[in-house]
Image (tube, rainbow, N blue to C red; front, side, top):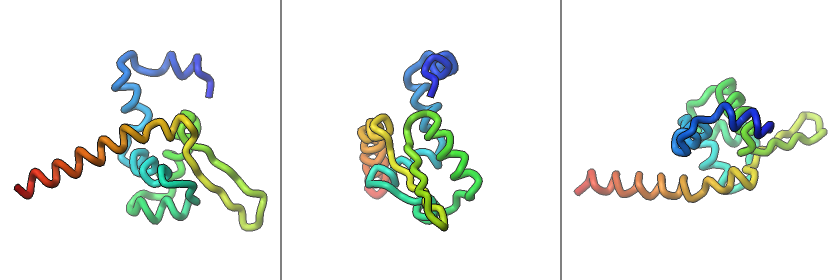
Length: 112
């Protein structure tokens, strides 16, 4: 990733920058699934559910371009591709943990 180019295109607000990188519904679910370990494309698609193959591919490419996801292609027939989080992607764990905790608390508050 070209950091100079990326820095110029990112918003000045750090919150907006974070949302630009992970604010899409599918990206957050991809991150959730990859936090537990490496996954193949089919595993991600099955876990996420209603996302189309085209959209999942686009989201993974965007996250790879932004340095959040690593894509490893094995020279096999049929080809095997695995996705994992980079160190930068792993650094999003506290954000996703906080989102999970908030979601659980919100659901609990509805049942009171």
